[in-house]
Image (tube, rainbow, N blue to C red; front, side, top):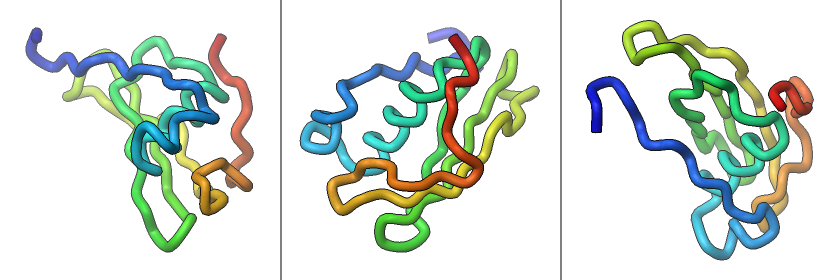
Amino acid sequence: MPKNKLPRLTLVDAEASQSLIGPVESLRNQILVTMGRPRDLIRIDVINLWPNTYRANVIVGPSLDRARFAHSYFVTTTDGGKVVTSTPGLNCVYS
């Protein structure tokens, strides 16, 4: 793999993702499906703060040394891992 390049994220059906992967990966997937894929996506960091409560940061940039936070969300989920609320709201940003 070239230097400063990370593997592309793989999308999984949002309904099935919780049973196939953990809650953090499921949340990454739901955010990516909802907002779309930024052209220069590096990664989506998801941090579990409390039960069913997460901070998600979308990190973009042309390279790792020029990375920045493009979006940051405070997210609550159901016990099943589905997004209930997000501040700011999750919307389609990229097509």
